[in-house]
Amino acid sequence: MTDVIRWGDVAMYTAPEAVNPGDVHPAVTLVSMTPNPVRVIAAAAALYKGQVIHDPYEVDRETATRVLKDMTKTAIAAPLEFVDLHFLFEDVTRALTHQLVRQRTAVYVQESMRFAVKGNAAFEVAMPPSIAALAEDDPKRIVWQTAVYHVAGAYLGLVNTGIPAEDARSLLPTNITTKVHYKTNLRNLVEHSGMRLCSQAQHEWKALWSGMVHAIMTFGPGEDSWQHREIAKLFKPICYRTGKCEFMGEADRWCAIRDRVEQHHRRGEPSELWTDIHQYEPLREGAARVAPDMA
Image 1 (cartoon, rainbow, N blue to C red):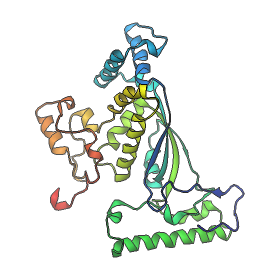
Image 2: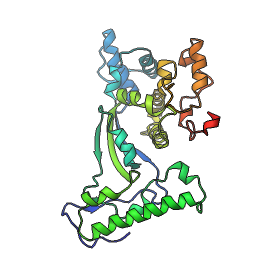
Image 3: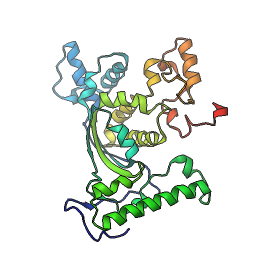
Image 4: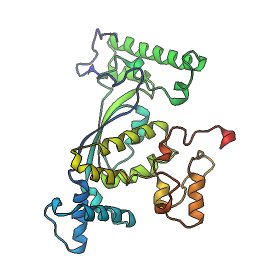
């Protein structure tokens, strides 16, 4: 990292470095989550039946689990909105956050590259999997790394000569990493998961969702772990919701589970009966990336 000699804007500051510089990949922290989430959902849903619950602890585990499962069988999903989740995503690319912020049912606070100077920029550009899979001396990988180092050097050179970061940043690659706080409620997160857990989603979304599911399941005290495990079961590819593949167009990629999904669809079997498909199978790297002659 080169120390900045001249700051072109008094609002500029040195950006925090990546969690794993040189090997950047999404890091997920669940900052906060509504306590007793499954019981809170059940308490809200109880009012539909005229039952008034003042304290979520009044709901026993069996009842809470049953009510949550029932939420997957009805379009009445408002009780899920009583559970908020606040994540911190670190070392995600700007390419991903461009897609993330299209979800309008969430709140975001993102690191501003107008003012945050990426002094370690050459080591904070995420390497795509097709490049990372190559040998270190492969010419294609060398081309990619050389371009990244050159652009990062030019960026820092401009900043060091007094160019404001908000102007110098125009050189940086789309895969430069950033940090973003992301808050949404459970209903919107479940709906969002349908697209992002599909094998059609890009590889970085698969890594991010793996981190989100892990963060939820390991959050909070051990006595609440059963609730978080139940919450995690709600996140499924969109085909689980509709019972069929929703990406059958010519522009859509091959999918590792499509044939099985369509077989179940033709037999009229709902996703609850799909014992040969795991809901997180599309998260595996390569689930939608195969050679054209294999698709």
